[in-house]
Length: 356
View: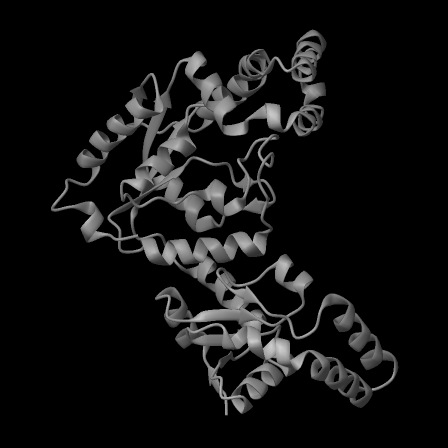
């Protein structure tokens, strides 16, 4: 017989990578939101789920169960084979830990394949995520990276992460860079997905002496940051990156590669076109159409992004912030590493003390 597992037991095993979570909900439910790292082996596809739901509402519960049994019986060999190919410990879940996960775990047990079932299903997991974000505090000191658009803040954080420093890449978690062009070349996440990814990161970073993240606004694309990050940002140590215009333009072009997303860039620009003086807006649009991306980026920085960032900086620039004037991301990396030594003097190797 299968074994139910509590959310606490399941979360501990999953974060220690000792358990493979398997979402048996339909593909559309899985795509909308799921547990990070889970596999999708649906008991019913979207059409089958809709059909059974209609029968449930319009005919009877028994008729819906009978139709569900017919559908499952036809696909059972292939369904079981998918689970048999997973050698690790498995835990199945559906929306509420109900019929779909119970059926899956029971059938697997009959075939000699052990699988846990998550009590309460995805709904219980989502409630835990919301509760955790609402009650936890960020134990490490926040080190917040500021800088004008194109200052290489994201590239800097990722280089630091490669070196073993504790990093919270909020733009990666959001699937969005935070600007009107932020979704280009990325897949924006919804709030549920962002929250789930964020909780995992925060739990793993809690033992670090500090955590670095970019100074984002409260909203990044489709998602809103929780209060715990807003509070940590206000109370943290602030580093401001200053970089020449030429280097910033180069960084933006390398990051966005507008020649690969020309139409998306035009569509995004038209959302802010009315906020610029007409001659400037016309020149930017012309540059984007003609592939003169370097000039388009330069104009956007001068007339749109830099004035907006300057205003925000005047509203929020704490005393004691560290200002780093650098020529490149490489210089910024070396400078930030020196600053980190003064924030938390090293006592041994950070990488070995705080594996991430």
